[in-house]
Length: 77
Image (tube, rainbow, N blue to C red; front, side, top):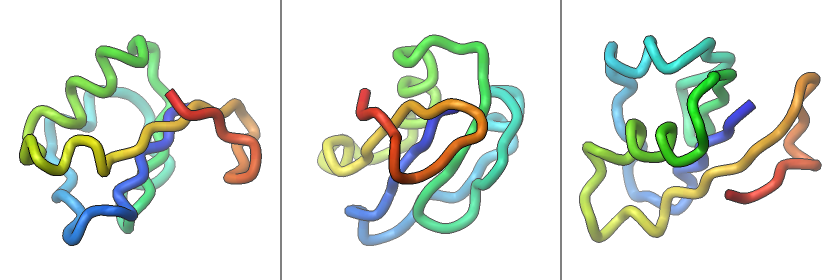
């Protein structure tokens, strides 16, 4: 399970249709998106961040978790 945290951004990006093919999305509204995918961490990050302004890239945080996922044991990547 990959978790994308947009909490540090002023505005959360819109969820695009192209993201649907990444995997199974458990949440994609709000500041934290949660997805199960077979993509590598680097492929996942690249797809999610390709439309984010360069100055905001360091504000987007990525975490790894496992099913059943919980927001207390996530691992940054």
